[in-house]
Length: 93
Image (cartoon, rainbow, N blue to C red; front, side, top):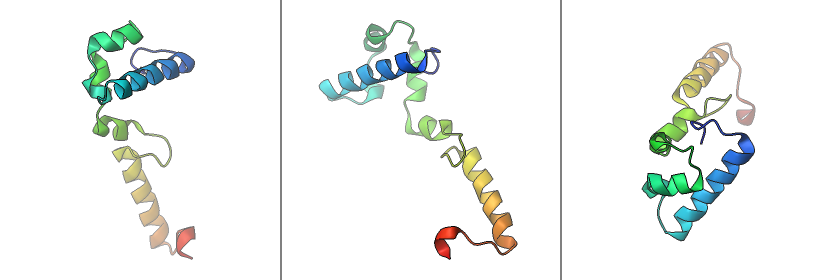
């Protein structure tokens, strides 16, 4: 849906319809066909399949504290520096 450049509201609607179809047909989202996705929204291309993997989902979470490898590495560097200076995470006090 991100690849198609849809506004958030439309993307939310499209995602909801895709999830509903997957549930109704007892398949995962990556098992729906391109034709089924295009019935939901004609702007969807075969690129949809590249974003339906767990790895791509994890990688896409680039916001502060997200799961993207780059963000995890940033947090590790941050805490190594803080711990070296004697700081302690709040939940360990």
